Length: 321
Ligand code: ADP
Ligand code: MG
Image (cartoon, rainbow, N blue to C red):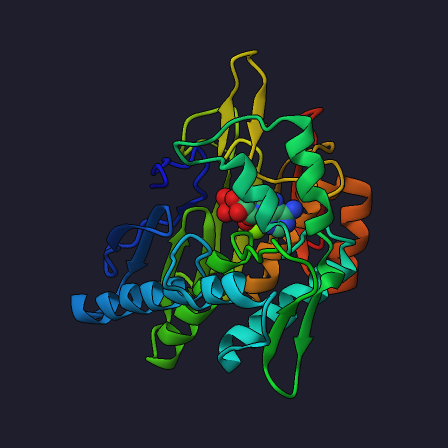
């Protein structure tokens, strides 16, 4: 059983006071975090429930921890045979593979065996021995995942490999939910899946949304800066979101480096990506956190997204926003 952890970071959203349109917030504990949907118009509860149902449906496809998910079927069988998957899963895997290649594995879809070993966020979390780490490192090379575009099938070239979509799933789900809202004519809504925010449309006042970025040193709700956006995802990754403190007092967080086998470390404390493609934003926020501000800036420009990084020295880097 995975332990439910309250994420220490949640992006908070702010809005100017507006008497006419009252915010109504619906919350659920899903995706191993707190999810909330804020609507302003006459969207009824049933409509919002439809969004939560959609969320669960997709989670049931991509969750590595759910034995019945389509992804688990891939992880169980792709070494023995070609596993045929749905078009939807195949597209997501191809996208994740391409970002893995471009970020040189800073975001790595093949990180599964290492994530399982550390088990951060579960009852079994612990610092693995160096020999255990040595053992899984050869299983993390994404080039040993073969994706067949024509057949829509997946094959692992090494036994014991596993795909983990933990660093892209919430972004993908928020894209699907944002389309659901937009497709139903919703002009103002905020989807917040444990820090993966999608600002649908504009604030009911017609102005852009103002999204606060959580200050890692203060309680939830305290922010170190804000960004203005509309029709856009704001996705943040930070080492302070999910971590454990070992017996020696050392802090180990949940974004791992496939080369060393240990938590990734750079000059970035918190990395936020702003773009209308939440799937991409989720992958890049993880990659940028791991890469550090210099390399991250190149990635951000290549993908033509916006970014805000909080650095260890307390300074803030803003790119394009
Ligand atoms: P969160 O899920 O807390 O929003 P991220 O999007 O950064 O944060 O994803 C972290 C999760 O992704 C981890 O819990 C793990 O399942 C997986 N993961 C860890 N390190 C990597 C990595 N280098 N590349 C891809 N996925 C990773
Ligand atoms: Mg991510």
